[in-house]
Length: 102
Image: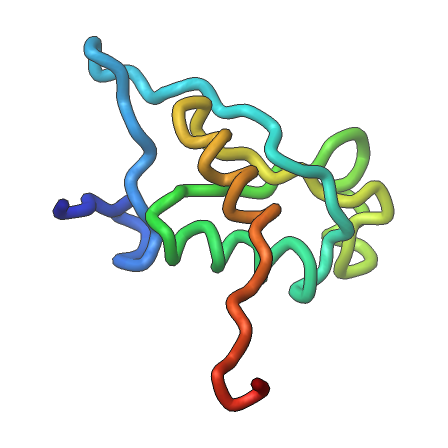
């Protein structure tokens, strides 16, 4: 299967469209702390599996991001509705044990 990508970066999967060419509805996947360790790693994991994801700052979170460098309200992570279940399953999955650890 060949993936198409957003024009912004070759690493971000394209947002799916419906039969009319309209972008699919975005749904909230998770609400998390706005840090590279939480939000950015989750986005990177999802995009590595071909699931586009973006951050949205609720309330006055965007202003906090500009002033403080992070949002005190956290950040919402959104994915396409048709990929939400796959994204939830991916985040809930357990890592495979490393053979060297056994």
